[in-house]
Length: 246
Image (tube, rainbow, N blue to C red; front, side):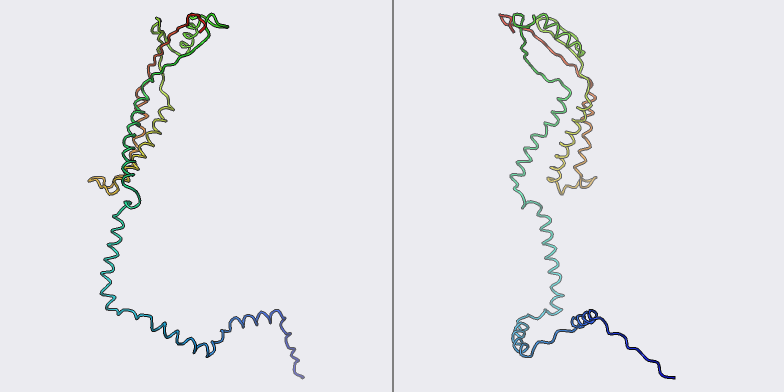
């Protein structure tokens, strides 16, 4: 029988041929520099190699290692023990600390004064009996007495000066406000102590965490709440001018 006819494969597309040529071109190493370039650069390379100092012998490196390690450790210790002394002025720091220490007792004063009444004096002017739409002194006294009784105040003295006495109940919002202010004050005090006594170590507890002082803040609200209701006195004196217009 006649031999089979073998059909040759079709040629690859032009795009495939182009991509293959690019891959071969990229993989081909660049040609070496010309001999003239090598001869011209040889003196410069020799100078650079000649100027480079040789490495020290291993025996010298081994002998110098302990001294270098000791010097590095000493430098690290000096940096750690120097603290922030170089980053702020000590005069300014201690001045601020003294001002803070002088103002801190105001926190205790605020807690103490929360349980006592504040003395206030006010003057009110109203139209008198001889003015337009004015009222007599007796009518105004009756209105004031009715207003005070409506707010649970009782008459203690009805002389020239009328004295009213009432009970001011404890305020939950006032108690929480005192706790909040005390917590802020203790936190600022803890920050000052943390900066001032950075290296302090106590015998039993070790290095103290000054911010635990904020746990004392609820006692301010407890102190206010245990003081109970406050007795409040209001004194009223009615006077009029000669024309009775005010």
